[in-house]
Length: 407
Ligand code: PLP
Image (cartoon, rainbow, N blue to C red):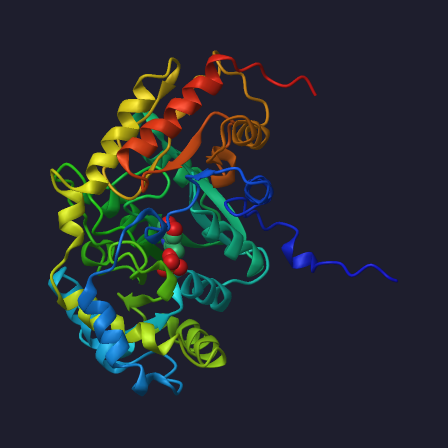
């Protein structure tokens, strides 16, 4: 029979977090091996529970959730999002400036699909959260990566960012706190991005899904609050701070000048209508989540489980010769560097596969985040501290006898 090929649209789409290495992990599991999966930021499998009152509210509203909702989402939930951002200093009053989606993931795709024509460029940080790059490619655009500087606490390199602006640039993505680096940007850094965007009439996509996961007193500045002069789409949701990744519930908020963006916003409305609405039971979680006690604080303050795990990861990494790691100020990851002199890794995906086979620990290679060299790994800091210490100890073990493959 004639071969059925995937669409050529997928040719430039890079999405390795759930790629072939994960397939190998599955195969090993089927053989009865226990794999430590440190590859995705999914809190629940590591024993993180959502606040009970959110679950109760969703259950109570199930009866009312059988039909489609308004395509942008329940008004009560969107009003709660408006109030949440008012408290964060954003000039927003209208729930119609809020879209609810099946996770931030769906809204990212919607926002890019509505914007991009073939060859339009989107500036995305490197390392990236790969969905931004993949969705840009899928929407027909070109992801252009601006480097973040490890020697400068992973802040954006403005020299690089400015060098990559072209007449085709349409938008800048800012991920703050950052996945995978854990950087939390200062007011000055964000304002500098705002100035570049304002000058060039660019949209800023501010992915702030980790805005409440902060360590050591780090302060998160909501980009839109600092940039009333920039058309900004802010993204966040319930997956991380509320430990509800499986609910697929997120929001997107439009702020800043938009008289010149009527057509774009109509495009977003059309795509929103085409998918009818986001999962309705999960929309009922939003108001309770944002309005209730913010239990995430118990996890990130001294004595908190997430903080202890970040520290355990850093401590275990520091014990491995030739491995260094900038201390993450937020989010759920460490992004260590393996000294290329000591560990000459030519193919980091192969490295991660060999590590998986030898030590049964699954991590993601730096190039999976569009990092240009093969000398980084991303490790999720969700497992219990003792498990992280064990897993990173196994990395040390693997590296101590590491001989780069010949082929
Ligand atoms: N944005 C970033 C930076 C993420 O790290 C993730 C998930 O890991 C997402 C978006 C996806 O979020 P959601 O579960 O709301 O689709």
